[in-house]
Length: 126
Image 1: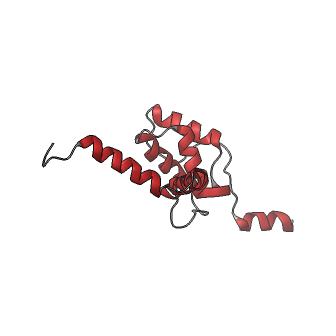
Image 2 (image 1 turned 180 degrees about the vertical axis):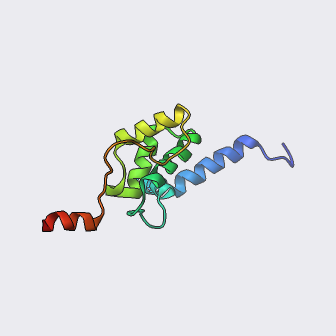
């Protein structure tokens, strides 16, 4: 093999170089885990967010083929205590699978969830 480089020799040398330059297994593993987690972390956690924003994230990640458990894990890292529950994430993935596209709450009949402040003040004063 004059003038040519044997591919097997290159592979062997690359592996030898990797092994000689790789830190010990324990530190390499922890570094790779922190690298993996940093790939999913943004510059700052999203501690304030709307439900619609989280639903949009679920829809986006689901449309990319990300598993539901991974969607929840990634959201929990970013949103922390503000993250919706795992059950809600699974519910919304199922809704998107069934064709839902809107991330806003649907209008419901019945008693409104909030009351004007002036009305409450008048009732308290009576």
